[in-house]
Length: 335
Image (cartoon, rainbow, N blue to C red; front, side):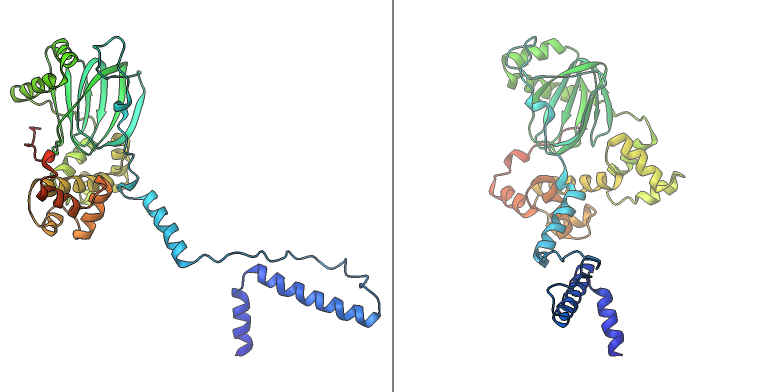
């Protein structure tokens, strides 16, 4: 029994320790042979097979292992790895546009990958065709289209035939899914923005109140899945795919091809954003918000909202009660 236990323990040892003990046994045998023969070194020593010496390795502690595993998890899943970039805010004033305005251009067929934009913005297309994909859906915006992109929105941009050029203006905090309107007189709005951007924003508010919203496109049945996720944060993707006679894997591939994100992650982002909007706009208990927005519990919501906004729900709630989140107390814009 003892010999079986020893053999089992030997089988569990790494190879470098086995080589170490073999080398020690060979060295001891050579020393005994040398003393016996009265010579320095045995003539057959060089013919023995050489074994690699064991390499001293610093053991990896449990804390180091946990930190490494945590970093790997954050990099692989969850909204923590969302790119927090705003592609058009680094643009320089266009030399052929009104002075002081930021006009962004994109070439035909070029794309700006899906990224998160923390601040809301107004996008006025002044030339060409801009392809836009966001929480609201997929849109093709031609000259005169005015797109309101809300706070904490994830969107991807692409240039249509001939490219596109658009004007970016600041907008107040908006926790709706955004809206798209049509501007009849683009040159007048450009002139207003060139003289006084605040005057252009007021004109946009008047246009929103008196013009209908343009619906997003329905290009593929993947857009139907997006609409279903918007309508029901508790939706099971497997049940929806079964009702449409497609596999879950096929639905996920089609959705990723359309929106550059998996449907499960899209649903998680919508839940986190919806929870954040309710946190900063009311005084409901956080546990109730977590339950009604589809999270397993409050801690699950805390992680998701923290990944999305960079701050915990309790921090947002304290700012809201102290008046520090007053800029988020805007009336919901029409969709």
